[in-house]
Image (cartoon, rainbow, N blue to C red; front, top):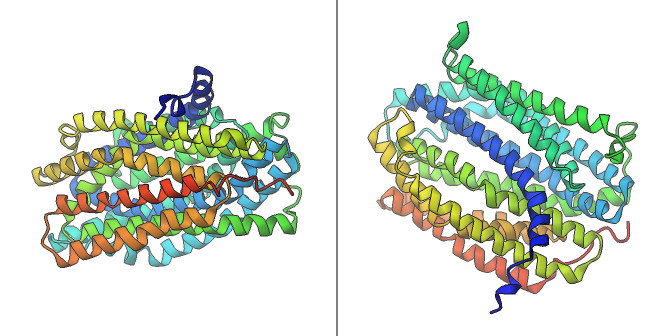
Length: 462
């Protein structure tokens, strides 16, 4: 095996990092803020932290719906830009607007009328009934306030994803930094009641997040419309919502599996956490601590995966098929190396992370175990993530649906359900077994990549 097949030259990594670093910083900032939110609420108490964690499980589904909605049109957007077709990019932008508006309204209705019932499904594990009732109240109030942020979250996804498809990644990073500052300041004064403000606790955390999202939205939208020369797709974007019927059909056909995939995948992950939660309320708190910090430590390889979709998508749009395999192979190798380093750091931090929370020793011990297990499987997660974006860049959304969503619902969820409901297996062993199922997914991903059916341009005839 030649090492040169998996290692690029300096120019290659400069190009990759030019795309990946701003995305990495933006996502890192967002996840860092979420981590601080979680920590601040965790300092208030375990019940408050559990309530917020459960509410965020539901909001996670909404965010993934938005990501799936923009991803299908994003395949076309990246390739339209690679082809130099600004009109096509404008149409894909409009498609995102219409689809996200419909999905936001649908999710808002579900949360408003069914939110309390959904939250209660995560609070049925071992623990005092009054503790579960208190966590339910915190979660319900938090979710109701967070619903206000659904509109700015959707618009941020629409604008930022389209800008990324054109190679503009710095704006989202800058907007994210400003949003972080706003969020941190408001968290301090609203959660704990500093500077004469009332002590609002969980509600204060939600209000701070909502305000920060509106600030981020205004920055991204105003900059885009004020720089029409750099963003010609926005010229006349709202003059009408016209999209050629053939393109609507193509984006729907290609995008529907992605939307369904992200939605069903997020529901699958939520169901997976629900299976874990039946063990005890302590498990809910422990997995929340681990997941919060995993999001921060995994931001490097997750951002490289997003970069793969952009870089490879542009190569496919320009019909440089001879470069695609080599570029993808080197990007995946780079992602796995980076994730291995981050996994080592995550393990080193596993002892002190749980100590940051005002919680019980039982929760801290469980959290440390979950952190170590998650870190050990991080390189596999990076391979899976990079493979997903590689397959998606060529429009093979049917394959990605089977690869991503199908795996969660056909393998991981049934495995977690059986082990949690019908065995007395210790939780950490149960969690490790469910994570180990990723080996199957890695094998499927390798086979799909090797076949090469995803290497094609989907906009050549538009």
